[in-house]
Figure 1 (cartoon, rainbow, N blue to C red):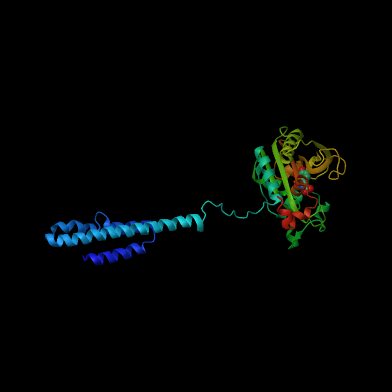
Figure 2 (cartoon, helix red, strand yellow):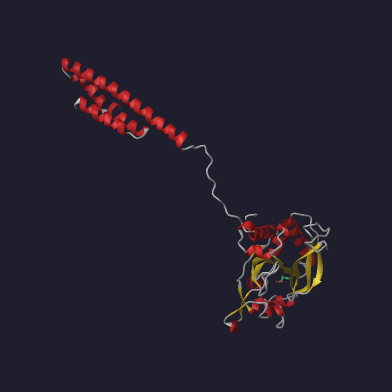
Length: 340
Ligand code: DAH
């Protein structure tokens, strides 16, 4: 090959190398062990002496020139790389962290409740929000004349003759679960429920409850077990030394039934506006599962017994986070939500 031509193409190749790897390939192509110029230099010995001298001189000069411009190009490319790293793009700068959303306070509460009960061996169960009259009322021993069955308390769905409704509590899931699962069992049911009522700071048309149910052989699960479990729950949930007390109450699906108060988590029992100066807050309905409920799912009350309870998750959240209006949970106001 003509040495001068070789020099020109080599120079072009060196110029167009865009990075160090490409440049290295150009070096190999001409100056490497099997490079074009190297081959020429090696074959000089076969030339007649006179030609060998002129060609040899030229070839060696070209070799030096190419080595020089390769070095220059190399410096330039390295410089550019350095520049990118140090001026245009600072690889040491911290990245932009993506804006994360917030978990809704009711989600935080649901997760915490689930975590505490799971640690005590309870299974989390769900049920449908659209219920039949049987599951929501009859199977739970709620009499025909009970006010909750009234059009003014419950959202009944059309067609009316089918008797479908938006469930007014999570208790129907007790029935659904016991129909399909044999005791011993312990479940909690977090879920959304619906009431047909005027809204104010403590009433909403939909809110959240957690139902609890524990059934075992007669004599094994007593009110004492219930007290221990619910005590454990409140201590874990409020992370404070809470006290509880049971008051007799009436719910059709339990016998005996009671309402549970906890010592006010706001004033620790001293008396404040949250507890109406009494030191106690009403929080939960519970009782020993009524024999009629057990019968409705085909369990013999002579052999089985247990407790059930229901607690409002909104109420738990309001107490825990000191929220004074239930409607805030459903208003999508970012000023409220971003505090969690
Ligand atoms: N279902 C009741 C309500 O919505 C709450 C309740 C009370 C649930 C007593 C229970 C219970 O399981 O034993 O008001």
